[in-house]
Length: 611
Ligand SMILES: N[C@@H](CCC(=O)N[C@@H](CS)C(=O)NCC(=O)O)C(=O)O
Image (cartoon, rainbow, N blue to C red; front, top):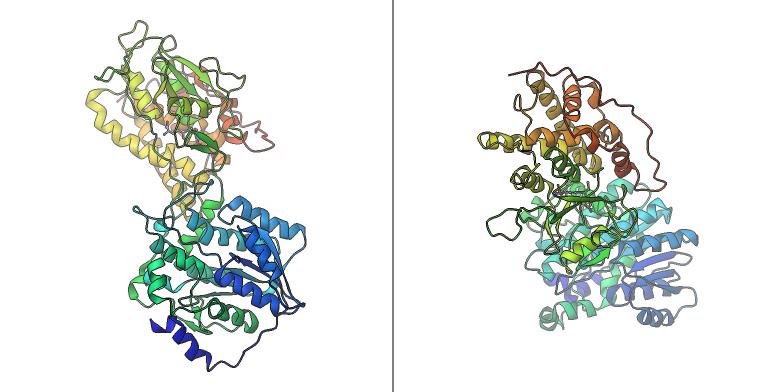
């Protein structure tokens, strides 16, 4: 592509009529302005009369830049900000709002190409956070806070490298192994898609352009691509040539034929050379992915044994909520003898509001394991450091927060801090933190101990059927309510809602002729379903928008829920205020709903249903 080199620039330049720009009275914002094209743009705009706010990490370089402005009409004002951190980007936008600074031109210029995959303290790949998400957040925040004037211009600095790649949302944070150049090209493709989205969304008010500068010699390219830089050095453009189209766009605000076009050397062009790059993900999916990353859905997590308040993203590109797998999966009573099935050795950490932890609480009650496994509960609602204990220290391990239990088990633990946790007091570690496993263990592991109930909720002949129905109920009901509540796109919510109620309708019908899901005997599947049903009207109906109808409006599911509730030991495990507390109590001001009035003890009249 010789036209990307300085040869192309020099030839095209001969035909251009506009040679000087005037930005007198304008206010600009340029990201990544300490070196390369951003630096050149800032100087050119300031020398042409603009007040230019520049943002970068290096204070010293920014101050040097301030001093280099030669015109008295314009100036440069620097802000030292790490644009890879969304918290900092958010504060920057608020700073401008608080100081009444509104912009005529925003140049989303910073482009970080890295040789290694690194993550920010917010858990995002650093290049992606800087190049894509940071610009997304900055632009959206400025728009929503009124920081971009009507008729203003936003220029997204892409790169010719994006011609080689399609939009691939799942690879935006890098693949394994990490390829820095490829990942950077993907970020630049994402900028093009984002620009098209913005043009279509805000095009009436703001002029959005994306451009690429050709092959320019900048410190960034020299460091990240030394071979490319050395091989082409005499052909690379200087930063002035790289900045030219941006200045020209801001000055002339040209019409654009097609929302997807990209500008290069003062002309608009297609963003595709190769047909394959048209096959990528949609820009709507990109936007929904970026949105999902900016909305916290849960609390923080441990990284290398240290608590981080920032949440790790856990949505798919299409806005669907994904529940991560549990990391500790040891088994009590397994043949290796590591965790023998004995009394007074194991302890459960739970939150009685949580439907997963609740399964363990429930099994401890119905299997009569109270004298075998001890238990302590976290406070209902999570705080700044996740789950914590009400009257610390918690007696068993003398901890205040549940994350200390995890780092006690593994000082370098990285991951979410979830309940339930089954703790081994002998080896001081976590046996298992997956409720599905814990209830299977409780079902049989301790049966030889005196006083333990022998009822088998996972009978061998029915295991395959139980597993199959469990899967449906998990996807559509247990986790389905969360999929409704945590969906990050309308379509993800709609799908989750439809699946939830379709499955509940089918279960309701099934329970018309069977007392329990598999007939006359209660199985594991009933208990797993019960854990969600008992929370339905108290929380999911309203909090998670699962509101086609209340559970108490189902003809069979509601009496069935009461039937299970009234079985020995169960009622004591259902803690209504803990359920309300976990779903409503976390945010400020933590007001719990008074209703609804539900009578789980009302007669269920299901004794006569037999198969
Ligand atoms: N797979 C786990 C999921 C447990 C889970 O997600 N628990 C929630 C509370 S209801 C939790 O602790 N969430 C904290 C977090 O995700 O950071 C299980 O079923 O045991």
